[in-house]
Amino acid sequence: MSETESMPATAADPPARAQSRLFLPTLVLAYFGAALAALSAGFVSIPLRLAELDPADKAHTLSLTVAVGGIVIIAVSAPLGRISDVSTSRAGRRRPFILGGAIVSTIGMAVLAVAPSVPAVIAGWAITQAGFGATTMALNALLAEQIRARIRARVAAAFGMSTALAPALGSWMIGALPDNAVLWFGIPALLALLTSLAMVAVLHDIVRTEPVPIGWQSLLRSYWINPIRHSDFAWAWLCRLLVTLSLVSVATYLLYLLTDRLGLSDADATTTQGAVIGVMFAASVLTSVVFSWLSDRTGRRKPIVYCSALFTALGLLVTMSAQELVVFTLGIALVGMGQGAFVCVDVAMMTELLPDSAETGAGAGLAVIALSYQLPQLLLPLSATPLLALGNAGPNYSALFIGAIVAAVLGGLVVLPIRTVR
Image 1 (cartoon, rainbow, N blue to C red):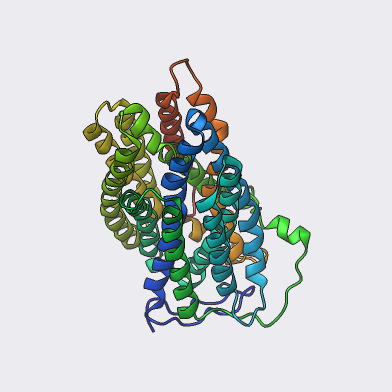
Image 2: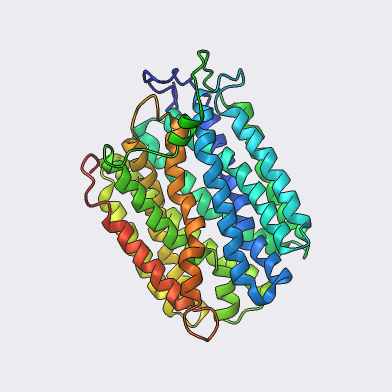
C-alpha cells in the first residue's frame, strides 16, 4: 500500500478506498488548476478588466466584485459539502462535485471573457465562484479522508505551494498573452477543466450505499461547528480567518499598488506582478518544505504559526514603507515566507481538530474550514473600503497595510488558547 492507502472509517462514514500512485500528484495538480484559474482571474484579469471598464472607480468596483463572489462561495460550499458527504451517487461522493464545479466555473469564466460592463463582470465572477466552491470543497475533503495524518502537513504544503504559484504563473501568462480578455480568462479555465477531468479519472471514490436523510436544517447546520464544545477548532478557525484577511487585503490590490503607488503602467505592472509573486512563491516554497517536514517530524504546529504570523507582519511593514520596487519585492518575499509556513501547518492543525461525528463529515467539516478563507472575500469591502477612503489624497494604501498587519498579529495570538494540538 502507498502512503495514500485507505484511512480507517468512522462510524459515520464508509471506508476510504485505496488509491493508485497517480492519486496524490493528480490531486495536487487539480488543486493547482483550480487555483490558477480562480486566482489569476481574481488578482489579475478582473482588476485589468475593471480598470478598462471603470478606471475612475476601479478600487471600489473591485471590492464589490470580490464581495459578491465571497457571498456566493460561502453560500454554496458548506451545503454542497454536506450533500457530498451523504451522496449515494454511483460515481462516488466527490467526483460529481469536482466535475460539476469545473463545468460551472468554466461557464463563469466564459461570461467574464465577454462581459461588456461592470454588472456583467460581477455576474460572471459569481458563477465562477460557485463552480470553484464545489470543486475545491471536494478536493479539500479528499485531503481529510484520503491522506493520513503523518504526511498531511506535507500534502497541505503542496496545496499551499499550488496556491502561491498560481497567481505568479497566472500573472506571467496573462502578461505574455495578447490584450484579449477571451485569452485572459479562457486559457486558465481550460487548464482547470482538464486537471479536474484528470482527477475524476484517477480517483477511486467512496461510494455510499445507505441513504442518509437530509433536510434544510441539516444543510443549515453544515455552516456550524459549536465553538463552545470545540473551542480549539474555533480558535484555529479564527486564526486562519485573520491571517487570510491580512493577505487578501494586500493581494487583491497588488496590481493597483504597482500602478498607483510605484507608478508603473498597466502593461508593466502585469508583468512585474508576475515577477513579484514569483519571488513570493519561491520564498513560500522554502518555508513550506522546511516547516512542513519539521511539523510532521516533531508533531508541533503552534510555534510555526507564531513564526509565520511574525514573518507576515514584518513583510507587510517593509512593503508598506517601500518607495521602490526592490524594497517592495523584499517585503512581499517576507510575506511569502510567512504564508508558506502558515498554510502547510494550519491546514494540518485544523484537520486534526475537526470534530469526528455523523453531523460533521469531511465535506461539511472542510467546508466550515473553507469559510475561514472564504469569509475574508466578504469582509474585505467592510474593512478595506473605509481604510482606503481615509484622507483626501486618493486610496490610502498605508491604512490598508496597517489593518493587514494588525490582522496578521492577532491571527498568531489567537492560537495561544489551543490545548489539544502542540
